Image (cartoon, rainbow, N blue to C red):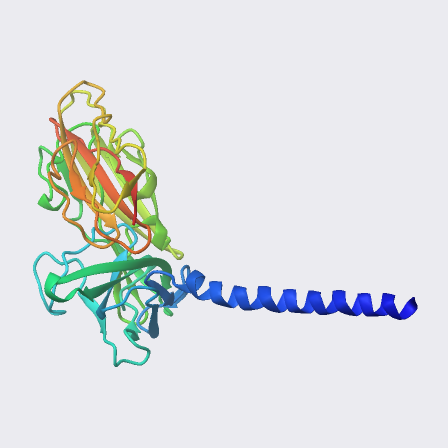
Length: 356
């Protein structure tokens, strides 16, 4: 009787062993399908801290995307408009940034290689990788991946300065054309700020994301808004002070604008959307509004994702054709509206996630 019990236990153990082996083998068959991911940047990693001017290794996982012939890499500031892709890295004109690297199949690693972090880079930056896929007689299509990293120079900030006329006169008495039509109460605008670093590189540090903060001595003339934006709220004089890494610079500003009250309009880019590849996507700024009820002028731009053809960018409802993708990707768009008196809104953003 005892030997039968022992034999029964052995049989159960044997059955358990074969069952575990079967499950393990089955999982081995399933794993490759789970690992067949879409095209992805794997190095540098999302959120990595990189030193400006250094060289890192760009590496991508091709996933299940086959037929890739080359991968282009681009650097952008966090909120910069996406460039129009160019074949030549030295191309000029409408591009925001040149091609930082073209990765080919015979590179080490394949479709990657040494990638120079921009020498003048500072703060959050986007690395965009666009893979070109050959479809034979059907031509080519592209897929992309994008990550956000933080770039910092390994050099101290020596001086900081407003890059504009000094003193700055805004309004009817004279103004710099660099800031557009600034003659209205409620106007929202930006001022370029640059820093000279100990490594001899001049970097644009206008964005608070680069460590810059602003202060106005007279809040009844110019108010400081989030994101480093400035708003005219009255006539008179003020001193703008910019601070970064313990360094400061000041700018005397005189404002002489139309005394007629004018509240800046409010941009509303709508709610985030999910769209299928190949479908027509319509954005909507129809909920944007002006306190005085004036007609609005619209300006849409793309600030995330591989460049797409956005139609009617100066209308309330622009549209685009969702591209073909292997895995869902997010595109971000920015909207600013302007009223008839020239006052601009604070930017509004909307994300569109495109699914295969």
